[in-house]
Length: 529
Image 1: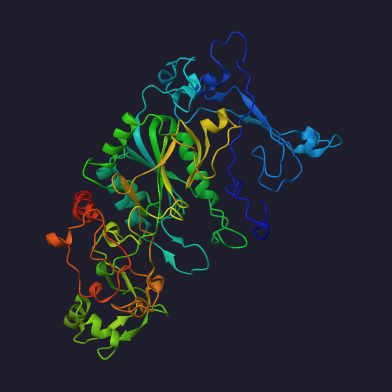
Image 2: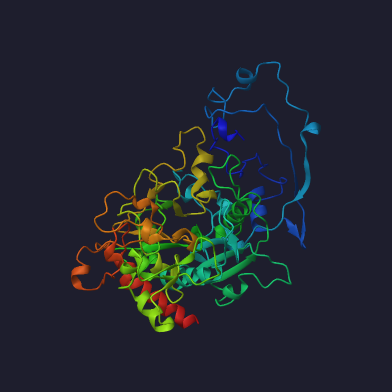
């Protein structure tokens, strides 16, 4: 891989490859179906023993660095011409010297349902990225699910970089995530790849949460594969979350054939429906399925939401250096906080006007959705950067390899490899952006740790302060204007607290989250409990 100082090669940085190899059409002349069809049906496994084995032999070629040509970095000719690129005297290594993985068994496909492979499509149908592009042996007539989710999570984890803090909120977050997407948004099933310590003696797993849901709705897959490198992306040795990437590839390979739509999400992400035309995310997606047959990938642009200061409470966890300290009644900041509920609450408990921490944290009695309902930008989100961390709902019969934010290998790319394709996106009409004003948006509620909020009242600009920078403010100061409904405050539904009204705003709440999704989520969580 190209060293970072020489320019990061984004073509191959994901460390996942999908290869299309030549496959014999039939095992022998007596076979009625193709070899692919026989394997897909499970007939090649006899009494639990595979009857077909393969060898993998890498073909080693000179290193290539630049991104040019026929999809191969460093190649200038198109189509690729080995003699022109490497000369007539270059000799590839012998097969014996290339390294070989021998006798790899071809086992059952993830889901074997022979009746689903009996349907044959018209071989004369036009191939334009539609289902006609799918090999006949792989076409499924009756899928068990319409919309499923894939989640890779751990009971506790350290954030990227040099942070020494450990986030142990995953269990609470997963419960809220599953409740919202299964009970409210309309997902059929969620597959949870549990990256916790999954030894038999360990209780620090996500099993207690997944067991709260029916097996028809949630499947937990123990996935104890470690993260080899958790550095930040801009590090000289960028982080590679191989465990996460492999989990996503596994979910697509195991369960993609049995669903119409699939989404890979984190437990701090919510797919939020907006507008009044649809009653749920599923309702909207069913409409897309019926009216936009060419659409295979729906992209949600992403920005990181801020924790609304009006939903926060003083930090009362383990003492940390940056959070230690007192805000006394004589301090300038204390005069602002004295009018807030915190001061009144502490007065009753302690009989003093002293706050024991300079940091804040999420209120345990509020949901993550309500806490982080504070978007840093108006909608639609900025084109310039919000696309980079997009998340997608995609059709797995079209997207053959998905990597976190992008659809890497699609059937269109395999069938038409010489056709130019945009980077990090599939060409229209197969991929399109979700309209954040009329359809939906991604709420990314990534945890803001208490340490980062230390002395927020000094970092966040007060009303009328035009010199301080808002980007130093780690908490959300909600604006009076509300996304999705201009006259919401005039109707009296939103009450601005004394704290948020004293500082310059830096985020926006969404009306449908406030008025519909948060109340429904709270009720659903009470019912589960």
